[in-house]
Image 1 (cartoon, rainbow, N blue to C red):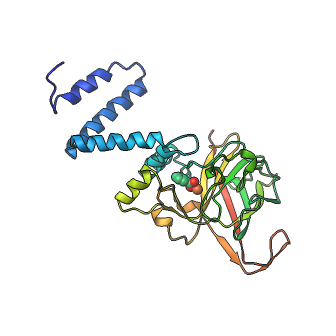
Image 2: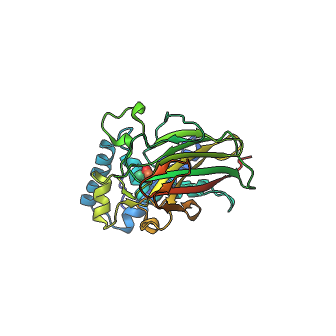
Image 3: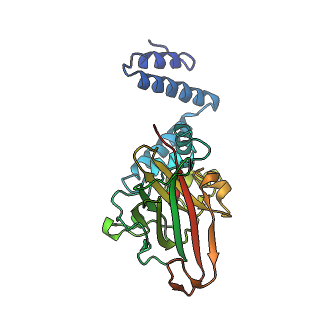
Length: 290
Ligand code: BEZ
Ligand code: FE
């Protein structure tokens, strides 16, 4: 087909992917072309704007690697990641909600005893004791669940963001196994709100659209046990000023925890703490997948 104009080109582009054998790929390609063409028509995209968009995506790809996940960050900040998470995990009201995974989880974090570890491993911050429980939707304990935990330090950085970081330098991340009553506990530091990486194309986009880049204070958890949907979630700090405007749209009300501040005194592990400290008591409710 020749002489395609701004109106007939969509039909021809759709015709060309119409023979895609994989039916799901065909469905996705057809919808993608329809929406892309519709978008360009709706905003009357100019050649200059098209080139700027392509250059932006090229730079977003070029800065990405296995640690710097700028493409995922773009998806997160456009609300696409949380949309996909939300539509993939409709769950009963009792179950803890699923949130964005984020770019800072790493496989192979150190296994820690079910109770008593200090996962800060020297990272400075306000001390925090976490006592958590994993149950099913009816409240029965889920024992033997594998719980991956990761969080930023008091300056808002993950260990993995350090250049040449190695897994044996892991801090503020750990893997636990729940006990017979579904419980696990550990010591750490109080999480703080922090900005998502803003020194790349996504940061430029956030500034150009007059958005802040902050995430409310949180700790990440991923919980796996056979027979249950894998739970990827955060526990956010109640009262944080960024709960309503999280840069990546990840806050669900079932994921807000009560981090309680205490004056200096005896901590839950019976140690004496000379500074104010925090405790978090939180129950995760898993959704059965059978
Ligand atoms: C995070 O909380 O680690 C995160 C999630 C999405 C984008 C950037 C950071
Ligand atoms: Fe985070």
